[in-house]
Image 1 (tube, helix red, strand yellow):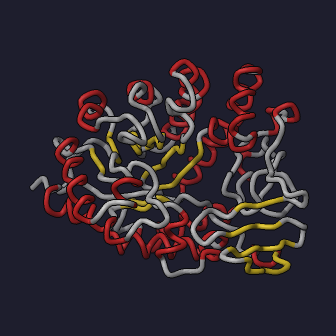
Image 2 (tube, helix red, strand yellow):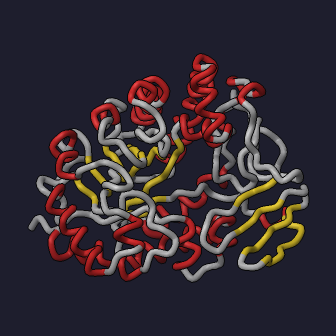
Image 3 (cartoon, one colour):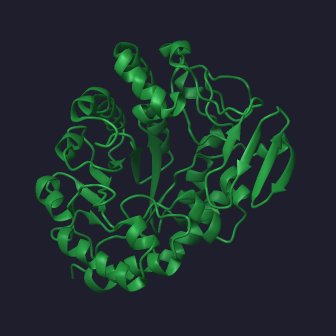
Length: 385
């Protein structure tokens, strides 16, 4: 991650939450709702697939979460949690749970009602979903955005602490923050968010600026807990969502501030997860100050040629990804996965600075034997010795 050359190419994939639910042998409700459950799922699958790192892509959970439950019912293949406040959470066996209010709506907000000064950080994976003004879980008490030291509850970092303590000496532990742009789109809804960006750019930028403060604070908290790297989840910054001009205006400056704010206090790698068609903006992503790019979706999911990306930015950034998670990992055979992995190694291995990985998250129903072929490929063709 620091463009050094290890003994072999590392392997590390981001697994979808649905894959943890299906493949870890643990109850999906426990994985999603408890720090201990998710930590155990992360460790089990890291060991099964022999990954060199773990991405902690859920925050820690309120240890008293079960006390808010009124009842749990099973409806066909789904479980439904009824909370005492009248909300429900629909829990599919292979996908992220979804929280609905009493009126059946999710917790999105209208842009006209938002006051930028009331924004700090929006956690899309909070147990109670998104709200405005934001508050944690079912507490109904918004934390003060003007008191950064107390905005995040202590248990918010529990999963990170569990992983650092249990396996941090063996594998690389990575925390995750959402980019300001992603947070705002999740709160507004994608269509409404893009419309707000176009119609009221000044207010939109004020919101991004406020969310940048909170994102830096969260990143500093993760760093203080001992993570080895931080991923910025910026899923909506690709060419299928916004133009180069809009990327430069609404994404790049704020992610740059996030990275500078964290690096001002901690010298650790920070890298960027951006999905889809990013072949036209690799150099712009590098301008944020990021240490690396994650996903690098190949056609047909994206438009990145790995060998070309290595030539263009490989001397400045580490690269992670490029194995098609759908057509290769989900639909392919172990032999096909092995072949594609060796092609990625040939394209980007030279000189270090490459992590073999699926482009985006491993799909929920991906066969475990296919995922195992990634380590097998590096074992045979990824050595620098």
